[in-house]
Structure formats: structure tokens, C-alpha cells
Length: 393
Image (cartoon, rainbow, N blue to C red; front, side):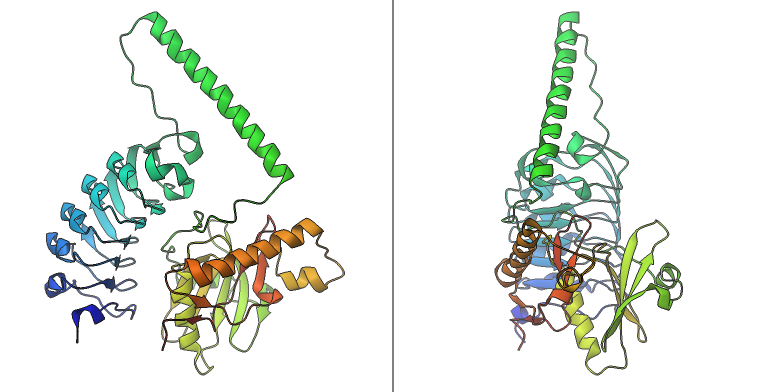
């Protein structure tokens, strides 16, 4: 077997030891996916040997220790996910030298200290997530950081920065300057605050007149690359033991329930019929597609729950139901602008799946009942159970 053909290990919840040291000697390895296992131990300095890698995903394991500074040598790496582990220490400033990075996910760890300002130099960084760590200090606001939202940083109470990130304002370092300088500084702050309020007010007026965001932006900044973990017992509690009163849809392959988590979040639980032939393939395909999609118009996955007897996806709840209801029910009506916006949303999702995703995806079941509408009437394409990745043979 060629080393380049050793690209991915996908079987989840099967590996529960440390990563073999021999793995770090595979200098021609292109893709490494050991996510959704129970791997422990730390990341060694030898990770720098994987210089040919463009994709490394070690998310949702039990890795601990520091992120090695030698990771900077992975100059070809495009996608790096170390999310949902037990990593600690600081984010190495040397990550700023990984010039090819497009996606960086370090969420759900125990990382501390500040976010290195050197990350502003990553010109291609399009997705960044350090949420739910113990980070502190000022959030950089230059380079690619001008495109990130509060969702990249939430769950870090000690972070500070500009108001757009919904964190506290960083304290101004006191100086021993003259009273004149202090007055000038105060005037500047007041002027900036007035300007900011004016801009925000103008933005709300514009949004009220025209709801549509830019449809050319392909990366959905509202979802995380790796979902939070939700147990089977949490799903039982959220759906009242999968009570029929919470059933909002069913078919031969799955049943769909509405639920409410302990934190108050509304969810949808898609439970797969384990008696149906080929259902494991459908579940695996939908997991593979949904966990890597970075776009606002396909359905957002929150988590998955899987064992030998039960498999389910936890999805974002869509308050306005599906498009079929709005098109064919006498109790609902869409105006011309709403119809146009929905068509644009669906077309944008299809364009992303066909051309913007790393591997072209054919949905195979696009119909009104599989187009869901959120509280803002933004359309989301759902049900990827029979979708096909064009690299499949």
C-alpha cells in the first residue's frame, strides 16, 4: 500500500489507546482523520514530520497536554481540528506561520492565555473557532479576524475586545500623560461610541428594509466544525422518552422528534430505524456530510448519538417548519420577496454542495418537505441520507 493511500481512519468509538508513535513517521500522509475515538496521550513534537498533510482531524478524543510548537512546520496544512479534547496551555504563536491554514478549530479544550496576534497573518484563514476554553486577553481584530463573529470566541469569559465579538471592552492602560491627553482620549472614546451606535442603528434600518445577507459568502460562520457532545440519556430527557406528543415527522427510515435541552435550547432529534437495510450507510453518509459543511443554507448539525442499537442526529430546530407547509397549506402564505429569498437560499446551498465543498455532493432528494425555514425565514436544505459524494466508487 502506498503511504499516500493511507488517508483516513473513520471508524468512531473504536480506538481507546494513545496514537502509535509510528504514525508520525508517515511523511507522505495527506489526510489524517482519527476523530470520534477515545484516543489519549499527548501530541508529540514529531507531529511536524507530517509535512505533506493537508487535512488533520483529531477532534472528539481524550488527548491532553500542550499543542506542540513544532506544528508550525506543517506548511501545507489546510484544515486542522483538535476540538473536543483536553488540551491545555497556550495556543503556540508559531501557528501564525502555518500559511496555508483555511480552517482551525481548537474549541472545547482547556486552553489558556491569550490568542496570539500572529494569527492575523494567516491570510487564507476562513474558519476559526476557539470557543469554550479558558482564554483571556484581547481578541485580535486585524487580518482574517475582521470576518469572524462572536461564535468563534464564546465560552471564554476572560476575553475582551471590540463590541462586535460580544465580549467586554478591554480596559485602557493608564498613563501618566497630561490632562490634555486624557481629555483627548476621552473625547475619542465618546466620539467612537457615538459613531458605533450610529452605524449599528443604520444597519438595523437597512436590515429591516432588506433581510438578505450576501449570498456569495460560502462559509457559514454560525456553526462549529465539531458539535457538542449530547448523550442518549440527555436525548431521552429532552424528548420526554421520545413521547409521541413530540413527534413532528416520520418515515420508513427515521422518526423526527422535537426536544428541549437542559440549557433551554430547542432541538430536533432524527432517530434512524435500525431495522431498515442499509440504514447504517445512510447514517454514516449524513454524518460525513453534515459535520464538515461550512455554509448557512444546509441544515446545521448540533451533535450525533451512536451505539450498536441506537443512532440519531441532533439538529437545529426550525420554528417555521418546511417549505411544503408554506406552499400547500391554506393557513400559510408567502409573499413574492419571501419566495425569491427562499429560492436564492436553496440555489446558494446547491451551488455550495456542487462547487464549494471539498468533494462535490449530489443531494438526490431535493423537494419542498426537505427545505426547512428558521425564525427569520432563511431556507435550509435538509435530509442528506441518500446524498452521494462524487468521490464514492
